[in-house]
Length: 351
Image 1 (tube, rainbow, N blue to C red):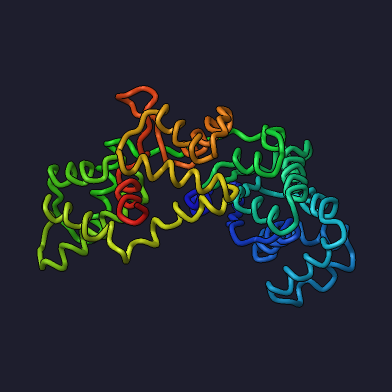
Image 2 (cartoon, rainbow, N blue to C red):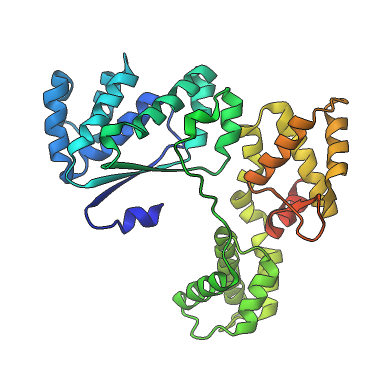
């Protein structure tokens, strides 16, 4: 998403908004509008806004960015749905095509539900769908949304149907291929001054990390360079990479990099389901690979004998969607952690 913002195509304007900290719908629209205020190419938009909405925008040029956001919130306070839609509709004749990058949308929806109730969250999602599908904007305004948790789980939590997002194409972000991973690792190392990176060292990186998730790859590369410096070495070898993983990646000082995976279970699942999910993950972490029937038996015990197969299947699918578990490729109907790194971390700190 950031690459799209940093390197847009010709005749495109890209606006990125991380919504993880936003409290409500009015703030969402206000933050989008504030980005326009800071972009000189949006002058035509401001002229139309002043003509259309009058007093709310008469002296908008005279205030700083915090004042702009405050003015928008005041404008949207009484009727954010229609007024927000009206503002975005002004993009119909924008000179360039507009791309909105909306990050952490599921977390925003959960926060709205927490602050204002599930009905308000559902209302926002349906309003947002209406904005994305406005006929007059189809050729001019485009949207990309992202999230670190499953939007489907959020829909279930707030009681909204799939219709709220059925205009969106789902794009799962997968791990690197082996070729991509090696190229990325080599690029990171050479950018830090290593002139030569032997093939056996690249293989060791992949052997240690197993599933080459970019985030985890970067942490291991950084810790390997730190280990090389601690040992006063000028090059990397397989032993340094192994040590960097055990004593660096999984070290207490790096716990914050992974703790989010544990905390977000409480944030995005209801309390009882969160505790069940943690127990299932602990069982998989302990055993490495667990047959589905064993997980089902544990689920029934944890839910006091409530053998709800639909709820159990849904929980397993959500743990897959959220990148905790994956069905084992060698043993049908058995589950393991999606990544070795996350399993090793869970075993060290949550068993």
